[in-house]
Image (cartoon, helix red, strand yellow):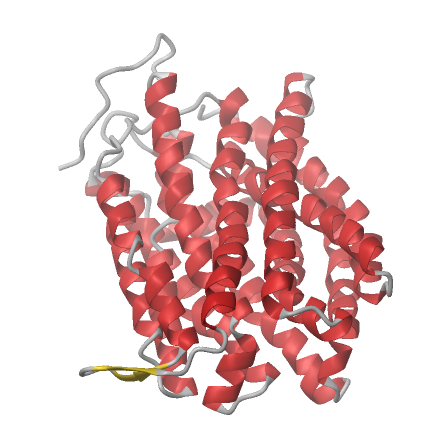
Length: 454
């Protein structure tokens, strides 16, 4: 049974303390999700050695294996979240992906690890679509950009901890021989790492159950605010598709623009420690520490700045604030992302990498806020799932594998990883900026149309 919120503020939204508590738990969940998916970036060399695979196969493990079911299941899970208790859906997802991360530590071949990574994607598909919808029902529109940006901090906290904690584990066990565990057999250090980062997530799943499901709002002609959580009030999929098609200029620019940025973002996230190690001669754990701290400082700063900047623009009458902030970030990101891998001086490379992380983080929260602004409540989770379907299938499914493909089959040299990263930026970010710019006008029209059902 769906629980409702009894303690509300004067505007009908949950009290700030209750709303921000929910966001805090969701940030923790998002943090663990990115630790579990990004830890692979520090384990490239031992996995290649023990499983006998190349860069391209590692790219598939970091991208397609995870993204395949993460994207496909996001759609039906999004529909469930528009009909049923969102908190419970999220809690089940956290439990499942945590267990599957630990299962990655049992893999003995490329395909068993591929399947386990698919399982991680299955669980993580249950997080963001219902989380976006849940947060949108807890905050008034003028505070939504900031709230969703705080939630999106989990991306960068989790990624940072994946590299910092992962680097510590790798440094400690780097030279350790395999250990023999009854029933499980011989376990290598990289396999043990998956156990260490995966199993604590089960506690986060239990913590999620302390969050209260808020009353749904903003349904207008698409459903009753008070009863939208009933299965009978769910908007049919054909109506969702018709809604998107009627606003194809808005959603097309949003989905495609953010997906192109995601290709570079996910490709970079997996390969940066290995790039620093190969092209600048660092130990992999030192590269992990450096990249982790850069993400922790500049990633969080970027996502918070993006949310605050967009809310500031909205208060000053910019109805296209969310799309405009991302377009501006993409314009600044393009030259920086193309140049930083090619710089020889380590200090300058790290400065440019910090700027890339800051600019790349700005869209993380406002992308979700843009969708909530122009989508009725009863279909928000479904539309968010469609967005994540495109952004992650294209971004996560293509990005890491594209970088590995370029080194293995185009450049024919693993030491040209820097060139592969630069080429990935050339092929994606400028086009994303152009598409987002073209989407500003239709987005403004969609915001005006949304006033009819708000």
